[in-house]
Image 1: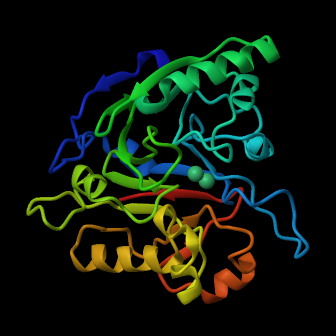
Image 2: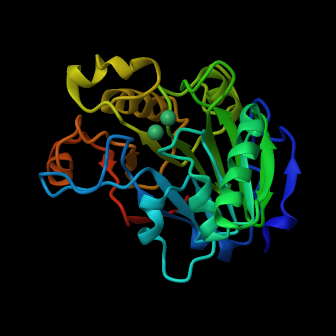
Length: 298
Ligand SMILES: [Zn+2]
Ligand SMILES: [Zn+2]
């Protein structure tokens, strides 16, 4: 279906959320939700480094049709001939938001936080002038607001991340059939309001578990990672690990057996190589890498 057919379901998830797309046909459920990591790096990646490692700037593609964040670095990771129908932006930092790249890709609709609607309009209009390409339709999102795009529902949750005094960064709850995935970058931990809206806050008796988690681990591993100066705006490996252990204990994270929690937005200067991460990360954490495709089922 086209992006134009998307319908807004304002705050339908609300507090004590229940899965919106619970009653999908079995066949569709079996297909799962496909996530392709186009980029898994933080803003300090500028091409391949001296170790031969490379992470593009963080971006994912859902079911070959919906983008979350996109920069020119991610272009070569798109599947051949892929024409995404829309994009959801987490925030306006340049390692996530690049209006010219979006216009060149011809994505007709962009969803983004209502707190930076004016900035988005201005920067997209400037990009349109530079490229001679049309400005996409812009749909502002408020906290707790859910967009339904065919069989996928996406809810805006608040992130703990600083841009300026007025912009509220977003993370997203993505629901498809029984699959409930939180995609959390950029954020320092999961904010209480985000936990409450998505249903994973154990304070609420009848919550709703997630079945999958992709979370940023910008700051690296160990005490050094935990004590990094980016503490107020980003997460460490330990932040993600503690979050996952608590959610598992409280049954608010119910993954399929053997499924990893994927780490993304990894800083070049704060992480070892992919091979070292594969060897060192505690279960069930796994560093995503560019081009990785995961099908989440529940
Ligand atoms: Zn970032
Ligand atoms: Zn950022």
